[in-house]
Length: 124
Image (cartoon, rainbow, N blue to C red; front, side):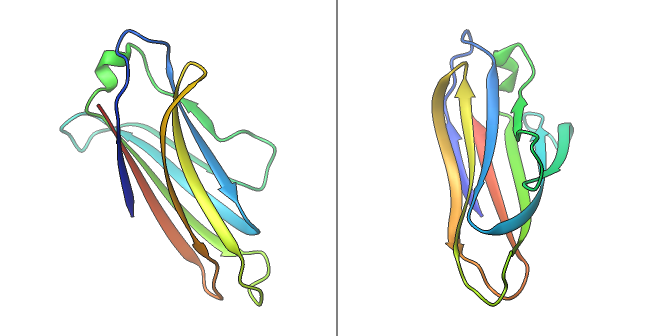
């Protein structure tokens, strides 16, 4: 589990989270946006890295309401070839307009078994 605090400009352009998966893995994920100081989930999206759809999500406006919210990305994955151990990297990047504000990532080596990763971004 990895956590990163990322500061935004409340008056800036709309926020976007971009998920990337590097390595020979088959991955499925769940992306959740939690309300500030609450267990309420504002957004919940599921996806995988095996289709041409992008893995980008716009955060709701206005931006100032995103301060204090938590992005939670849970990923389950397996190696394409579980007899060959390969490097992998799962990354969540936060953008404001076209400007990258920061990222959090998990990397390692695949194994025979299925694996999981969890990334958090706390918006400041």
